[in-house]
Image 1: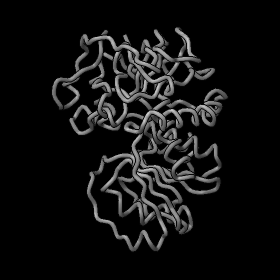
Image 2: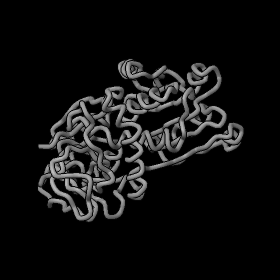
Image 3: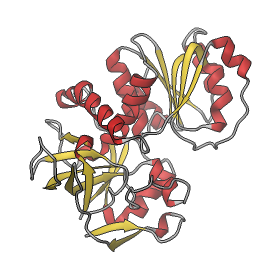
Image 4: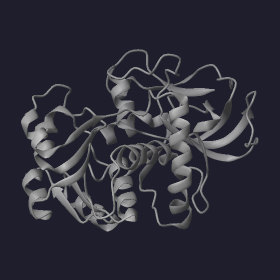
Length: 326
């Protein structure tokens, strides 16, 4: 089969569409003929040499994909060859075939085509596990999402609004602000010319954000705590703004706040399967009913993954950028 590979860390130009051995499904796994994969920030970090896959995982990029089951490994039940699925991966999605544990599969939702569903598993599982299962966002609470126009952001807006929460987002352009509001955000804060701490205070009449979903990390740490409400929960899921920062613990104590850092990729299989099962129960009906929109910015041939990485790296997209298999 062919897959996107790179021999050394670097920019998008290191990515190449090359022949690699076909994967074999192990016990409890299925083999998928990939229809599409989605580009995530973690893929860019891995390409640059900053985010190695967990031990035993595929070295090929790609944390989510869609396609059709080509073969079942030993011990798999409940699925059949030819089933249309999408999957949460630990790696391997930028390829014509990938093996994945059966517990990380989703059926393609009614009314959504198989290619488009490639943009669902990683973002939906990330948002659901962090905002709802970990931070326990409640109706009428306020959620602040950094990067509101990203795949994570567009997902978080819709899921939080479906629960009855108030949603604030940060964005970098007027176009992105308008799209986030269309999706249900109560307000979009342009971080280039507005202070998000001040604006959160104004928009919540001094209450602050009950939950903050942050992909920036160190650069925003102290300001995120400033923006928290009493008993607020800051969930850090990314490090785009660095890994080291100073924090006034007294400020956190006064707010009785919590700072939580999580990853999805390195979780044990049982935890991932539990998250997938919860998403299937609570989120998949919203997707199937049309209440949740899969926001796709563009579809790029998988062999042109370098161009897709350039788009994501420059933050030129709204929603997901998909790689369509060839």
